[in-house]
Image (cartoon, rainbow, N blue to C red):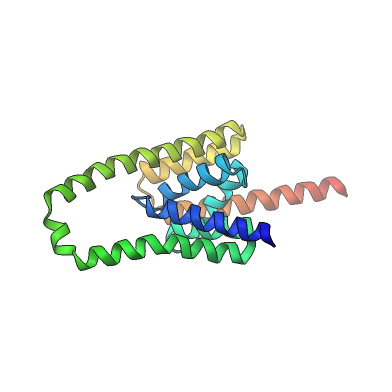
Length: 191
């Protein structure tokens, strides 16, 4: 019981910290969650983090919250998911509440505008790093079908301007078909 409390406390503090200092959207927090829970704590394997990210991306809602939910649930069940949700929501709620009160002053402030421009560049770099790491994980897995799916999805989203929703749905459907085909092949081999 004491160990579970320690895990919940670590989940709360980690996701609160990550959420408080993450600017630029959910992909940034997913990268930092990977560094914290995969690289530092070693609670989750890298392949599993990719799966959890795919689930978070595919579910409706903010990817930061979805990512916190799936990671929290993986680590400590429902209590972990609830802990991660609360810790992830507190910082943006407080920050947005303060900003909404002072919106006019923030909007016209030259220093704040330039600071946000600089943060956008940093966020772009962090997102590029996430993409590079995740793509590297798929390529190093040396599964030609996965690599092909990744390349086709990239081309569809970036060059053909296919809506990301359709890309995610198509990739999910492809994964279901691959899984069912693999199970059917295993069952045929057993008969």
